[in-house]
Length: 228
Image (tube, rainbow, N blue to C red):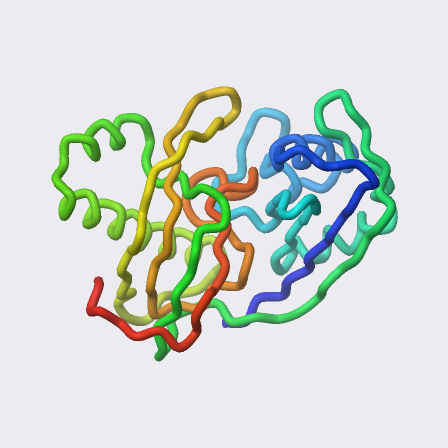
């Protein structure tokens, strides 16, 4: 399938902290009437689906990504976004740009090599304790199955039916510390090979709207090792 994407890039004359959650918090507060920005149907009920608006801070640039209906929302608020707030500090925007495009999402005949450019939160605390008890092969298999499930979950949220088996192989994986709404979490960095197209900067795993799990393709002609 094809996804409509709207990338809104915001730069300040001051260095931005790496706090995609603060970026999300400010925009959802400033434009609260747009429910896709904050994933709430109302003040008490969350919208449990793949987020159609995702927030990143990359190379000192705030990037907000709208997917399909989320792209329509960003087009509405783009001209009205003149500042961004990270905590108590307000940053004036001196440069704004947008990229609007359509990209493939779904099973591919070719294998592509991707890299997590922000930490992938794959496991909850309970599953991470199990992960620590596993040997190297068991850990790799748990992460492979989890990432496959992430692809299936994103596909369901975007209305895409996966017609065949996702084949996936994880490489060069390592752990890192993350903070999720004040709670310490373990994230993962590394690369994965998969027979699936996903646009750059979209996220996989937990809390993708808050900046986690963003991917970038580094080789679209990669060779499969038979993972999955």
